[in-house]
Image (cartoon, rainbow, N blue to C red):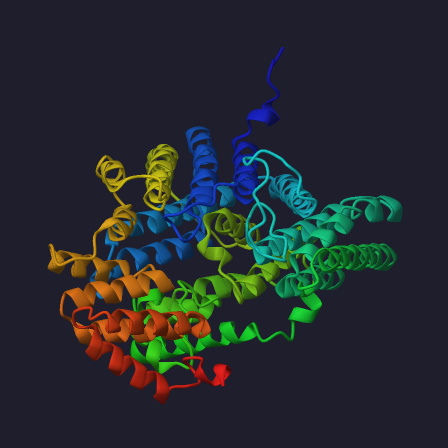
Length: 586
């Protein structure tokens, strides 16, 4: 008698369950703390589950073939690996995280390519993704009601009037809800009869309430894509398709109406997602595209370098109407073009080939659902950057692998080599994700200790010096030291060098002003003036009036070297009234 059902230990099912759990834990995680500006910790947790699943799969399964998507991810890996040799990367050791994630993509695509029962795996994944959406909507409602729950269960809403769920970003919350709606529509297609098919989409009402609370423009579009994808691509009796689509649409409209009403009722300053479609906030997206185009024009072949978008935006701040710094262009094609040039764009060719080659209007419902979800991914990646976040990227890898029917057979010897190589790498990834989680928490504690006024300078310095050096965390250590170092001429050359490194990937008004002050102490008045100008126009000149007052006060007090810089700054501002906010004050 077998105590354990064979299906429960099927490596394919274990892997897909752990990938789904990684996604679920990643989107519900409440640890959103600096020093990373890209919300690193939830992704480390998600990757831990994925890596554990890979260890189990490669320990028990055989690699008989790979797919075209496997090669595509390997090409992207190669592109990132050579970046330090073709572009100046300030922190090349930081690429360890991108390369680790891309190795995971390669490993996952191989697993899915060798899985025998993809329909079962996809169904399991959809249930987990639907669960993530339902829980996301519930956390939004809990935030709206201001329930007093433990921090590890409910993250305080940090999006102002909009409700952002534990993911702490309204558009990402809407993206999760849209993916869940797509999952519900696929699960409904597995039901026999109109009643069961319509019944299973009932949770879409709750998901739409969450969408309304998020006030996400993008979320509305993603929901429409889900409904259209179901209606146009699924092979179902017309009666069932029309009734199910109508029921889901009605529930979505009702839920969205309820969510929007609650949002507006709670805060008169809030704006619904529908109203925000024509909002001028779209200007910031356009500015980011202008930046990306400018960078691509100057470096068409290789781009400005992977992860160098923020540094490039600082270097070109005065060439645009406003300085809107961001580490991503919010459009995946323009971002890849700006950072990796034509070479990077060419690496997208295999992905485009897979999507086009395998598409037709006679797809199975599984393939139709995958295309629907991929369309949601691509649409969202045209306004945000989900594919740069591992918790979402791994789901994309799985989906792409499901429709990639091009298989490349391997010899037994090659299959064994790949199996044991990736087994070893998966073990390293699993242990590494735990190691980096522990150290990230340590760095985060020091970051907030440095910002804590109740700690003495000596206490802060002791905490900083006691940190363990970690490969890939050099940029975090530099940021911590940057905020700790005194503004005086002691070791000023080192301070100026450190400031230059920090400016390559960390931009805020305070960082810009502090950096300008350091360069002023280093007697680099031109660089100081440039940074003061950039601080003035930063984020639509939001802080320029404050900066003007501060510089004038300091110049009056006779601060060394500032009088000349301040005069040049004031003259420049008068010559640029629009971008510096003077027009708004008149």
